[in-house]
Amino acid sequence: MNITVLTENTKPQNSELINEHGLSLYIEYGEKKYLVDAGATEAFEKNAEALGIDLGDVDVCILSHGHYDHAGGLPTFLQKNDKAPVFMMDTAPEGHYLQGKDGTQKDIGIPEGLAHEYARRIRKVSRVCSIADGVYLVPHSTPGLDKIGEKADMYKKQGEEYLPDDFSHEMSVVFDADPGLVVVSSCSHAGMDHIINEIDENFHDAPICAFIGGLHMMGMHGDAEICTVPEQKIQRLAFFLREHGVQQVWTGHCTGQIGFRLLSKYMDPDQVQQLTTGRTFTIPSK
Image (cartoon, rainbow, N blue to C red; front, side, top):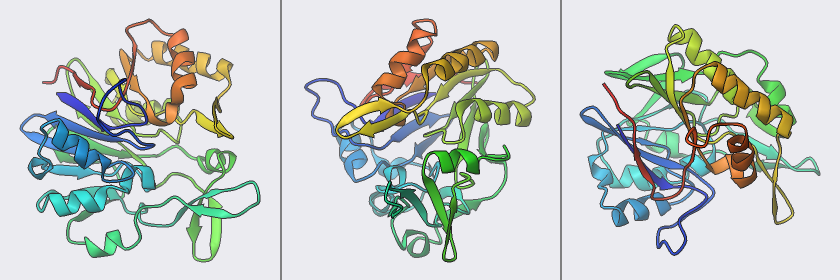
């Protein structure tokens, strides 16, 4: 199982690849090629070309959730690739917003009209399902996630009403690897611990050999990055991961540099690895 980071918030020094606030992963698993998210712009496509990856060969595209920094590049992908179905939660095309301090709502959803224009390509998901041999989509089943959405000032629009986001538009991708599962959860809005518990419930406590994705710990204060999660809570998360035997965490994007350093502080040096634009890594698969 090979994973290439097509775009992410960071990139190596002196790299000519394009980084942005977003995430896109190219995954080769079994006989198929998968695209998980398409970043915020067409940057992922330009990087793929620079890395020698033909997006026209992608067999399956998966949108992890309905936010622009993961869906903004989808129109580019759908024009470049005329065959791959795009799996997304059935609520992903609904309006999603970030509330400012003044109470105004900023649209952070997927490109307007995309779900309608490409309806024949889109496969809507509403429950745990298998989409290929050894590949599963797992929506959230944890109750009360709207409290997390409210705390993060994230909302969804139903009719004319703005409600705290319960992240029902978000799902994890699970690959059957060796010697356990690989979980891809691009932003983990619901909380990494909740997501792992959901995976445990659906896969009968099968071991998790890798968790890949952002952990939604990054915020901004003016132009300065901050970590929105207290260090004590990050320490508890590290203990939770050890307790559950999660062997590796590959993280970046909305984790932020501070969150990454704090998580690394409480885990073994080889357990936490950083996602960065252009990076390729391999996880043994069955």
